[in-house]
Length: 273
Image 1 (cartoon, one colour):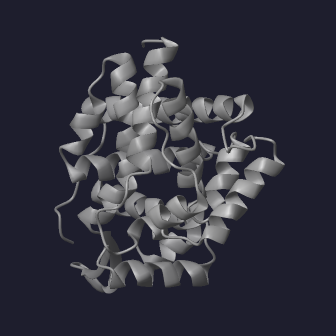
Image 2 (tube, helix red, strand yellow):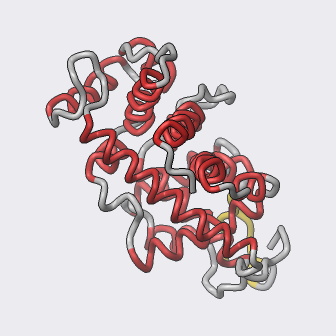
């Protein structure tokens, strides 16, 4: 892997730009998923379905999702209802037992949850000379399978985000993580002598579809923790944690992508139950 600081900063700048890109959808899917509890629930819904597709016996039902979702059972039910209304999840009876209903993530949900995975792998590809991102992006099935492999590892050993308290805190705010990434995008733009994206409350509120006061609360958290300066620039401690987090995510998904490419993803079921 190329350890050049300039190369790494440039690659991470590309990651940041991908994450804070304005959603092409008029429906606020990114606002819905840019919160850890809801993102994790969607992640595990995909994990359950692709695990079943790979031959695991447990059905990807709402009841099973409630058991591993980070949301309460009531909130899990409500969240799945929203995903169904938006067309991101469908429910259908199992062919061999129509009393059982499975939750099937539609490709647009898999692709949206996989967006961050592909962005991390694109950085890894650039630094290590691999080609994981194009391999995965060529198939929704591959994205779903890597989410399943990741979910299985997370359930066994804990989430990758756990050792990174600032990242975790930001992820629990609605759109807190994208606001953090916008701060980092400005940091890398400054290093490269480029025009930084605006960090005004108005600009970020419009981009991430939240209120100005909410963005202000996110900045207040970072400021009180002495992680940003008065100009909202990232302090060294924030840069260091963010880059360690990115390295951990890149390594996590690169290893799984290698396994998948080597044919260890398992045998999948047909597209429909």
